[in-house]
Image (cartoon, rainbow, N blue to C red; front, side, top):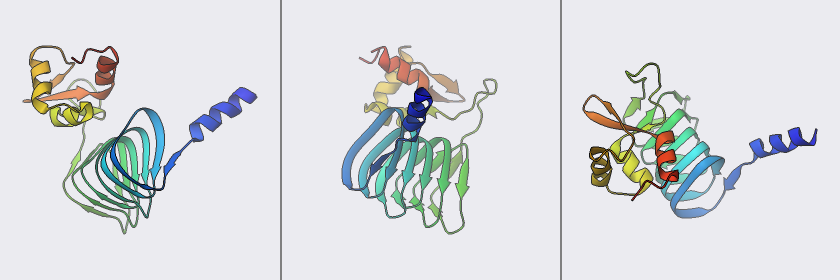
Length: 179
């Protein structure tokens, strides 16, 4: 019985930030992050991100499931789902396979619904462009293309563009192949 209770408590843990912060936040392990204050910089979240109603975020955001009730200025890539709830306001471009915009919420920018790739039925969710990967790895875009051309980086060609699967990139980084 004790084991079940501990497991449930772990799932319910939420990192709740109610302060003014600046910089880059990167969570490589799943987390439930809620921002209620001000944040400026970049957010790269594996797991769930909630931007509270009174939050003001000036950042590019990459995450799995993102819910926005506050103000966000920046581009957003949600691998699974993006929900805008009133009085949420996003000014920036959005990429996600599933988008929900509630009455009273505002989205000002371009939206690209991520679709399935041509390779079987594997969804494009969790895939990154060279520019997104460069931001994720904090390197120059030219370095990404150089690694691809040298065959050092796991990549998939879609049309004329390269795509990178986040899970494979994380494994690649963990194996310390980044040099």
